[in-house]
Structure formats: structure tokens, C-alpha cells
Image (cartoon, rainbow, N blue to C red):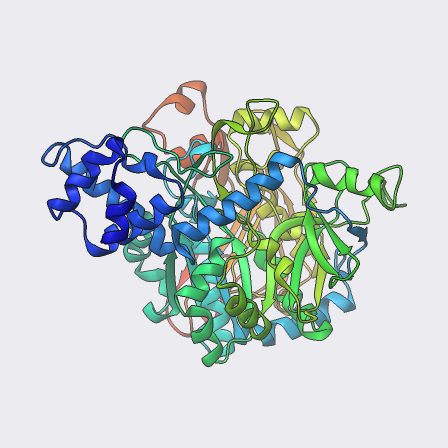
Length: 620
């Protein structure tokens, strides 16, 4: 270690650390890393160390943390520091990341209304889904919601209390059975969610998925930065401050783990990237994959119509002299100034429908695997990083708090250089996207400001609304109950419609399985399995819940279900909201849904079955 000793020689503040070399305290890898960090002007990491034998466990943990961060980041901590210095210099100078770019409307396919185009895209996408892997980004806890577990454990609905993870795996399981091929699921976890995610999968036998169908990739944290010179931030002498690197890490993990290459070898052609608490994504996923297939999109953003000025990033095609045009998310606070400086002196103005010409980004992506592999190889999976320090001085050199480099998975097109084709597919917002991220207090405040609540209750409300949209598309009569406020968030009490993936994966399948009929007000309809309804009515306050096991086929014809009472929404009291005895997943909603005596049809035996108008089950 002559170079390391030379770096330490004569620096009295590093004498304590040098004594650990003589004691053989550092491994060879740790010593090499210390040498590299000292060469990068990071002596504060090793300054004024206590003598060997004092606080040794803290020192070992500190060195282990440094080495883990070094090994996890392609290019190591020296690469991280170099990247940070470049980006911090740009941030300090106020450099515009879109300088020289001209924004235009992206190439897009509008499927925000149902029709022949939608049906064709969905049918093609379902076939292509057999060659697709689903990538679920799930690195966050639910603390912002007031939920202290992993967000994947939060129920997307509390009629039957199906968690987000259970819902996603139901889709993958149903599609795997329908298409005759096990569809892979990748889950990106973090230090905070890895153990909980694995425990949930183990406790539920992978929700029916085969063990080799699931790949878990755990992202590491990155060191925080204390100043413009990219000094790694400490909190105490032996405590490196670590922060999340962002969901863009999924690209790096797919590359470094070899997962992307393994998928390509197995015949996977598409990757579908989804978020952990958006229960609506699979309503649109098949059609989006179909659009990618028919239009040759290598990178296809699932998007929504966006109102100018709303706090949602806009997807724009950016053209710059000498560069390949690419479609990219431009954050809402950057889009309007960019437009005013280039093509629209009035900024982001609405079209004749009241929408921006730049669709709203919702971080749902369809990627073609072959060109993606080329990008991963050339970039080592590190997509365009950015840094957003909060400066505390006019010279913009000091930070209010430590910063870190971040990545976003939707920034991948910044690395496209070989003519990759990017596009956008626009869907109805409720159909494809309903976020679950705000606690009830924050959600109610957003409602007052005419913004989306984006709470557990509003996400559940939209989950049922999507079910009603499917019924209407099948020609059924649907009469909504009057909207009410629960803890300041608008809720439509019904009909509560849940059409499980085992019942239908596409709108075409819903139309095949449901003919006519009516559902009203606060009624409940749950269909799980191979079930056919012909002229079936569910009256206000009544319920029809049918679970049919694989191999069972159920028909219900010319029947009206009107028995009451059945399922009921019960608003929680203030005492219940505050009570630890009430589950958090209910408290973050402000209500529970209870079965007051509804008859549930559960058919476990294979064969053909009939449920009569009198509610009796007979073999067909």
C-alpha cells in the first residue's frame, strides 16, 4: 500500500487512520478504496480517527458501507464523485438542461376513447404479452400515506382487501395461464422494502406464481454530497449519509444482474415498467404493448391528457441541432419557460379540448428489449443523472442540506443514439392511472385546491370506476350512486365493480362474458374466474360475488339480485382514525367496507355450473 501510505504521510489529522493500516485493520479492497478516495480529495472521511481498539465496530461498519456503495455503483465511488462534480458545476452555474432544444408534440397514438383502434391494439398487445416481462418498481414505504409497511401490501380495494401486489400477480398469473407461458415479474426493492417484499411473497406462496417467475433486485443507496466539490457527507465521524438514487436504478440493476440478457435469451421482446401503487395500469397495458408492436416504438410512454399548468410533467419531442430528436418528460415547472423561450410566447396553452398538446407523464413505460440491451451495454445501465441541491449562499456553493445524484427511469431516451423510435400512447386518466400517495389530510387539501386527491380512498374509488367503465363498454346499464365526501375526499359509494383478471384481461373479453344487464347505486359486483352473465341485474344495495376456481365455468342468466343488506361503507369515527387497534390500511382511507350478510358463491369443483335466479348452484 505504498501509494496509500504516501497520501497519509505528514497529515497529522490522518494519523489515527494510518495506525489502522499498521494494525491490519483494513482489508485489501478497503485499503484500495481508501487510497482512491484520498486521491479524490476526500480526507475528511478518515480524519481524526480514534486509536485502534476504540469504536472499532463503528469503523468496520463505516468501511463496509463505503465498500458496498463503491461496488454497487458502476465506476465505483470515484466515478460517482466525478459525475457529481460535473453535475454540481452545472447546477451552480444555473445551466439549462434544455438549452438549444425546441419542443414539439411527440409522436402519439390517442386511445383515450374506446373503439375499433383500441380493440385492435389490445388484441395485438395481449398476444405480445406472452413475450413480455413485467418490471415493478417498489422501493418505497407508505409513510407519506400514514402506512408504515411496504406500499405493495396496501389493499387496492377493501371489499375483499386485495393488496396491490396480489392484484398485479393476479394479472400475471391469469395471463400466464391464458397464454401458456410463464410471464416473468421483476420487483425492484430497496433496503427499506426488500425484507418486507420477500416476507409477503413467502407468506402468500408467491400468489401462485412459480418461484423462477419472480426476480427480486435490491437497489443500494448512494452517498450524499455536502458541498459543490462533491465531498461525501458524514453524520458523525463514522457514519456516511446515504440517500436513494431514484427509480432509474432499475436499468442499472437489470444490466448488472444479467436479468435483461437472460430475458432476451428466453425470448422476451418487451418490458413493461409499472409503479407499486397504481392499480389501473393493466387496464391500458395490453393496448400500449400493441401500439409498440404496430408502430415500432422502442420506447413507449403510457400517458394521459394533461391540463396546462398542472403539476404533471409533459412529454415533448425535443429537437436540437446535431442531435437525434427524442421524446422526454419535461417537468411541469420547466415546460412553460421552455415553451415561452422557443415556440410559444404564451407558454403551455390549451388546445380546443382544454388539454396541452404535451401529454402528461405517469411513469409507465413499454420498452422493446433488443435496443434496450444496446443502451444498457453502452451506458452500463447508468442513465442520465441529475442533482437538485438547495443552495444556502448567493454564490451557490453551499448546501442547506446534503444532496445526492438521482435518476428517473423515464429519462432513458437521453441515451438513445442509434435512431431508436420513441412514442406516446394516451389513455383516459382514470382508466390507466390513479396514484395512491397522499394521507387524508393532504388529500383533502388538494381537493380544496381542485387537484386530485391521490389517496388510498381516491385510488380505490377509481378502481371501482374502471370496473364500471368496463361494464358500460360491454353494453350494461350502470347507474352511479351519488358522490359523498369522506374525510374531505369525494367517494362514489358504488356500484363497486371488481372484474378480476381471471374473469377478463381485455375489454373484448368483458364484452364476450357480459351480455346486457343492469347494476345500480351502491351495489357490489365481484367476478373471479370463468363466468358469463346474460341479462343479470344487481339492484341498489345488493351484491353478486362469484369466485370460480380454475376449470369451473359458471353461467348466470335472466336473474336479478336484490337481497339486502349486503356490503356497506362505514365511515370511521375520529376515535377509530386515532386508534392503533384499527388497521392502518383502513385509517388511511377513513372507512371500512363490511359484508352485512351477502351471499358469496364459491365454486371449487371443475365443470360447468349454473347459478339460478333463486341463487341456487346447479351442475349444467
